Every structure is written in C-alpha cells, then in structure tokens.
Length: 137
Image (cartoon, rainbow, N blue to C red):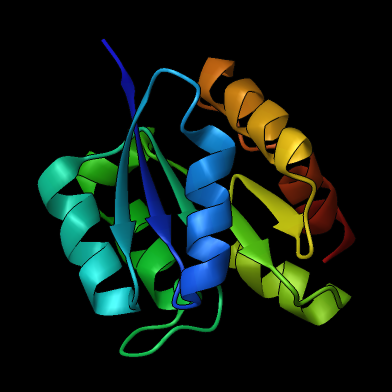
C-alpha cells in the first residue's frame, strides 16, 4: 500500500517542486495551499507524513502541526517542516509544535526524497534534528 503524503505549502512553485521530487516514488500525494485546508486534509486523509511550511494563510504551520499532534489520529502522522526559517527561535517553535524533523529551504530535491524515505521508515520517535533542538531549548 502506498504511503500517503500531504504537501502543505502556499507557494505554488515550491509545492510543485516538492511534488516532482516525490512523484517517482510509490507515494499517494495530496496538496494544500493554506493551513486550514492542510488541517482538513490531514483529518480526512490521515497521511503518513505531512510536509509543512511555517508561514501559510488561514493557519500557520505551527498551528496545523499542534492540531494534528493533539488529536488521536495524529499520533502516527509524521511532520516535516520545510522552511526558510533557520534561527534557533523558529526551530524551537517548530519542535515545540510537534515537528518530527525540519528541512531548510532552499532544498535539494534528492535530499528531500531521502529524508522523506527515512522518516517513513522510522518508528514513532521524533527525528534527530527535532530532538537536538528540543535538547537545546
């Protein structure tokens, strides 16, 4: 059965690049261009992974992640923040929101594909970068 991935990004070009980076693999891809739609898609589709931008209209990525992780259905959903926010304050906020891992923009498509594959193979534990950020906070 194909793993389900939700791509939540308000920038159409970046959303397209993420989709193209993952299309060759055996994934079922869904998209949302704002936070509210991302949360609705996560609730209805119950993806295995959400690739989430921080700054989106209607709900921020932080809010979407917190809502996903606060619900019983969200316990098994992994969240990868894909963001241009690189400061420790932003990274700490992503980690506190429940991020399993964080990847910076601009990104290398092959690195994104590798990270996604790795996250989907991992158990329920948070990603190594998110753990490092939590430890620093």
